Length: 282
Image 1 (tube, rainbow, N blue to C red):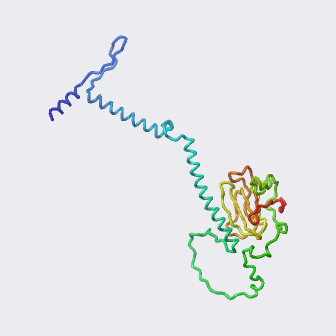
Image 2 (cartoon, rainbow, N blue to C red):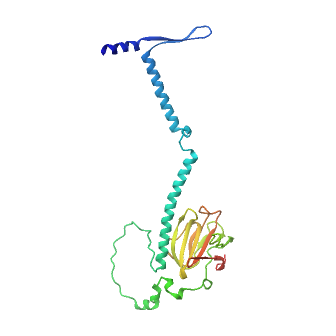
Image 3 (cartoon, helix red, strand yellow):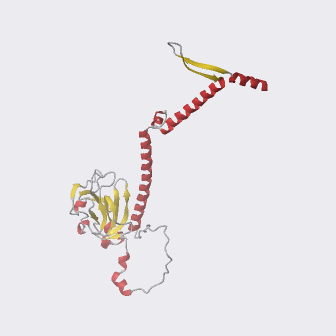
């Protein structure tokens, strides 16, 4: 066995002369001595370097787009976009569920919890009973604590009997059309104008929406809800109590469906949309 290995080394170590000559005058241009072993080693090294260069070009340059089955740049952008849209949709569903729950709580006479300080530590507060103020209770009366307007017929007024505050002074560019699905009125005014609440009420939703920017929704007496869309910023939080004329948002050009700085306002009563221009002088 050892003899065969020595014979193999002797054959592969045998040197040959490699000569390059000019084809026209047969003069020697280059010559070198090389063995079979060195020849195959050089070829193997060149092969390894070629493979490494190909890997670098394929994985770290735009040439990877030419590999069959590799996603194109446009497809990669679409995949990233759709992934972001799915995440946004999940957030929108969570916000919608929270909004519906707030409305149910308000209509049933409950109080909307303020989750702004959720997870924060609070100091221990000692609670103790205090003497009831009979004069105050007599002035306020038990009816002041009934937050369910559906249970109190005295609050069920017609919309025409209410004094709506103008949310912003501007020009109406798109009117209420319930049939095509435009349930509100679009008012154009100067960008960053203040948006005011049209009636006294409780904020049940105040969050960002991909489609309509910052949105504020307020629950009022008589089962009325007002909605303000495409704002650049909001100044209220869910659970805040606001009065008619209070600033609740800043006009903007936010959201996928916005084409310029404007306010989209909707008025709903008993689950049905009504024309804001019938009751508000913009």
